[in-house]
Length: 326
Ligand code: GA4
Image 1 (cartoon, rainbow, N blue to C red):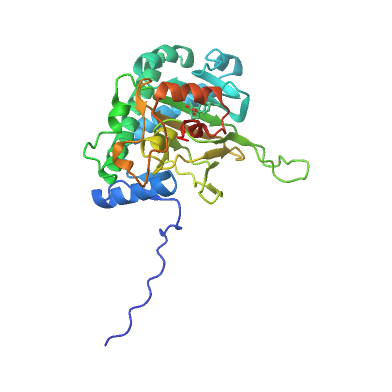
Image 2 (tube, rainbow, N blue to C red):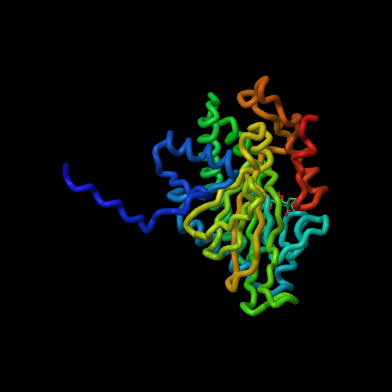
């Protein structure tokens, strides 16, 4: 017998176990297994090798920078958000506040074209850049949704993606800008100040695709009630399961609660695409995930009905509970 082979040194690239980072170039069945596990355990994962063009990302990032670097007065011309437009510190209309400013838009070319007039000195370029970005991330969202349908052993692989591809889909697009903080800003007890950029919530839609610059702050709430910081990475995308996806899968996938702390010395920028169905789409656990042992947890509701509930409540409210079967 030869000498025992030496224990391999830990590769520098080895990752801490925990929040999944999924390589989208993996073979389909492995990909399916990893995405299912992530949606069930965390309702969250990051993806690499996603195929979204660097140029499209950087162009939209530049449009965001151009807008946020304008004077307060100029930016206010695109606000206040109702709910779309430019917002600063106020989130929604029920008193939620955060240390951020943002642009919130309906993700369809007509609205983008209209809004771009108050957002950019070159509205045509702005619309073009944002539309290109949305097209690419929508494809990514649909690809992930098709993989989950496969994982749930549903024959119609486009059962979820077709909701998002409906011409009347209610998806939206958002750019958040969290300003930097002074390194020596402290609270009354001389501890570094903790500033809430965007308070705890879950996203109401089906799925969210987020890309940020290399500045941290995003945290997700684990099942054990721990806030887990997500290491920032500008070349990955973060994927969040939303409330509508939790309802469609009868709670098999969990809509992840998350928040953003704005404590960094560098400004954080994040760009989000929230994939939603049309207002009249019916959200109800799909028959394939309902059984005698696992009866339907939610009563059927339309996306429009859910949205009205969302906008009448506070950011941190557990809105899906209102739609649970008794
Ligand atoms: C959270 C996810 C999306 O950013 C958003 C947000 C919306 C808004 O900013 O207008 C809401 C928030 C979000 C959930 C509760 C309500 C509505 C602010 C708020 C207090 C655009 C969405 O769809 O829901």
